[in-house]
Length: 241
Ligand code: ADP
Ligand code: UDP
Image 1 (cartoon, rainbow, N blue to C red):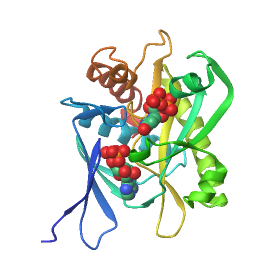
Image 2 (cartoon, rainbow, N blue to C red; image 1 turned 90 degrees about the vertical axis):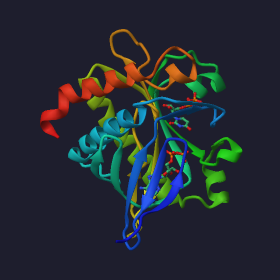
Image 3 (tube, rainbow, N blue to C red; image 1 turned 180 degrees about the horizontal axis):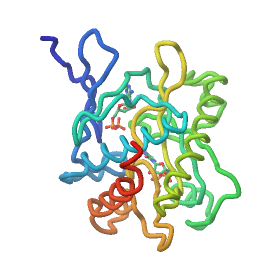
Image 4 (tube, helix red, strand yellow; image 1 turned 45 degrees about the vertical axis):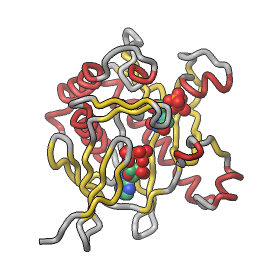
């Protein structure tokens, strides 16, 4: 029997690789972190919710022609994915001012943006994932101009489609982060996860937070809120997945 090896253990997931395979098994962990890991708590059930929400969203995106690394859900807290060479960037898309954008530019949280804003952050925990511009990206050699433009286009497409999906379940997509990898053929592929850990999701009626800001800002328990997002997806989309 081929033995699986632990390829990577991060703050939210563990990746396992079988020898001679380009597929990874991902385990979503029952752990919440914020402030680059300085705040950390075990939260039972969170891994399963994020795995199930991500699985729904990747499948719904695929139905709209946006493919990702997702192959299949293996269990409540596990997924099978295609391994890619990750581009060390966090690509953020914003529809409404919030979080670091509001703080940096002094724009009140909740202010709608006339068109989506795409930002790139260099994924490096030791540097606290700094915001970088096109020249930094070229200097660091993390992506070619063509890859950068491809990532920007992909992020905007994901934004448009996710906004429609979330609108159907009465959720406003305020902003989100995605990660993108390169396939063996050299194409860009949407990877990592899309969940309330990586998106700001506000209830369309009350503007209540349905995301990790509950944890970051000590506003209460995240589990019922993540469960609410999952329940809405399940109610609206279970029959078409
Ligand atoms: P972090 O690394 O920020 O602590 P996670 O705990 O979520 O985050 O770890 C998951 C890791 O797996 C991330 O570093 C991410 O870039 C990487 N990753 C996500 N999807 C893939 C993929 N398809 N192939 C290879 N690595 C991936
Ligand atoms: N985000 C993320 N991982 C990070 C940083 C940000 O998933 O390491 C997401 C975050 O959930 C939000 C968006 O990216 O949906 C923009 O985050 P922001 O830059 O406002 O940072 P924050 O206020 O969370 O520090």
